[in-house]
Length: 508
Image (cartoon, rainbow, N blue to C red):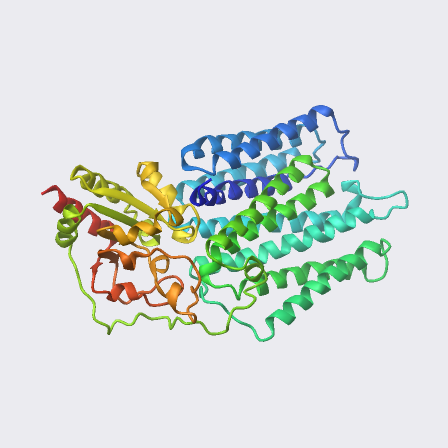
C-alpha cells in the first residue's frame, strides 16, 4: 500500500475513537446491579460490528474506497450501540437516549461546519473526549463496583478488575491531557515550538514509575484498606499531569505522530474499560484503534526519519534550542513573479510537478489547481502532484483535498516515488507548502526538521513558489533557502486567487 494511502488511516482511527467514546458512554449497568446474561446472539452481534470496523479501516485507507469505509463504520457503530442498549437492563434508558441525541446532533453539526484545515485539532479534541470517557467509567467503577459486577465473594473488587481500572484511568487521563495540549498547539493557542522543561526526562520517568507503582499497590491492597481512596485518585491526578508533560516538549513537525499516538492511547484505554464493563464491542474496537494507531505512528516516524521512541517519550533527545529563529530572512535577494510569468513558462514546459501544502488547504485552492492542471494537459504538458507523507499537518490531508477536486488518482505520487523526477522536470509548482520542500532538512544539522525527507524542488529547472508574503515561515519556524534560489520566482498572493489568475492567462 502506498504511504499516502496508509496515512489516510487517520480518518478511520478518528471514527473508531469516536466509536469507543460512544460505547464507553453506554454503560452495561443492570438495574439490580447484576449484568444481564450473555447470549450467543449478543456475542455474534458484537463480532459482526467488529468485522464492519475492520472493513471501515480497510476502506478508509484509500480515497477511492473512503465512502464505503465510512458506511461500514456507521453500520458497525449502529450494531454495537443498539445491541448494547437492547441486551442490558439500563437503569434509565431515557437519559441514555438523550445523551446519544445530544452527542449525535453535536457531531453532525461539527462535521458539517468543520474546515479541512481544522481537522487535525478536531481529531485531537475527539481523542481527549475518549480519554475522559475512560476516566469517568473507571471512577464510576471505583465508586460503585457492585453495579459493574466486579466484586468477589468477600465484597472486594477483583484483582484483575483493579488492574483494568488502574490502567484504564491512567491511559485515559494521559490521553485526555495530552490531547488537550495537542489541540492547543495545532489550533494556535499555544506555540508549536518545543517547550523544554529542566530535567524533563527525570521528571517524566519518575512520574511514570510512580503511576505504575501505585497501580501495583492498588491491585494488591484490600478493598477499603487505609489510603486506598487516596491511592486511586493519586493515580488519576498524576496521569493527567504526565499527559501534559509528555506532549509539551514535542514540536510542531512531529505533531502528526503525536495525534496518531494519542489515538492509539485512546484505543487501549477503551479496551481496558471494555473488560471492566464486560463489553466485547469495546474490547474489539479499542484493540483496533490501539494497534492501528501504534502502527500508523511507526510508519509516520519511519517516513519522517524520526525515532519512534524519542517522539512518544516526550521529545527525548531534542535540544532546548533549535535552528529556527522564528522569522524569515527577508533581507536576502529574491525574485518576484506574476501569474503571467507562471502561465507562460508552464505552457512552454514539458513537465510540471505540483507540490500542494497547508496553504492550499487554507485557501481552498484545490479546485482551481485541478483546472490549471487540466489546461496544462491540453497543451501537452505532463502534470503530476507530489504528496509528502505529512503534508497539511495530517497524513492524507492533501490526498483527500485533491480527490475532492476530482484530480485523477494516477497523477498523485508519494515522495519516494516522485522525488527523483525533480532533477528532470521543467517546473516545480509549490502551492502553500514550506517545510516539506526546505533543503535545510538535508544540510543543516541544527534545524528542527533536519533528517526529515523533503522534496528535491531545488533541483528543478524553474520553481514557482506561492505564499502570502516573504515574512512568513513554515510550521517548524525556519527560513527556506528555496525562496532565494536563482531559478525561483515567488508568487506572493492568496493561493486560490493566484491560481485563478494563472488559469485565466492559460486560457488566453
